[in-house]
Length: 208
Image 1 (cartoon, rainbow, N blue to C red):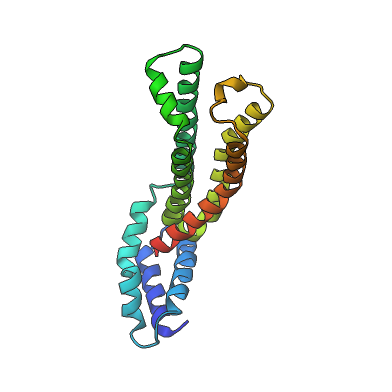
Image 2 (cartoon, rainbow, N blue to C red):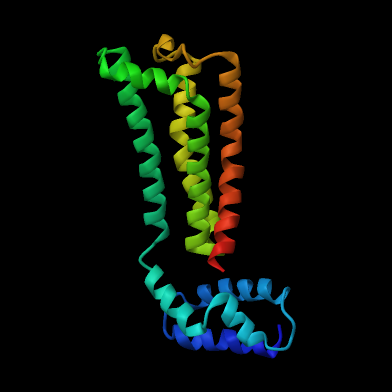
């Protein structure tokens, strides 16, 4: 690391002052600086870093603003959203098949004919999960992503178990449960983490 880059990091450390997570923040931004240095020449490195990352003072202020976004809050948000999707799906399924709510008939028919769109939206949700974690926490987000993924995937696995072993009425899902759709669901379940990981990588780059 050259002198200009080190001066940038020293200024950032001074701007952070007595922040209790100063060492952790510095370790993260050192990685960012090293990534940027691969693309820069020695001359004018400090100004180039400011152009790419922001000034040390701006970064310190940004960190103080983002401290309210804690890993636990981020994890709870996505877990809540995933559970909310399952609850909504359960209400639609039970309302149509058990209570025979007529107004759900049209909606149910459209949903069962739009499985590709539903899967695409759900995959987008998982990519968004990774992106937001990467953008908010950078290099520190790996463990958060892994932990959030494990918690969020549990309802998916439980539902698959209940359907495969027919612990809930199998006929409720007859319009969906053909061989191709089941194989597609299994494939998509295995693809969720790679999609989240790609989103995380994209979000991490966006945070630089």
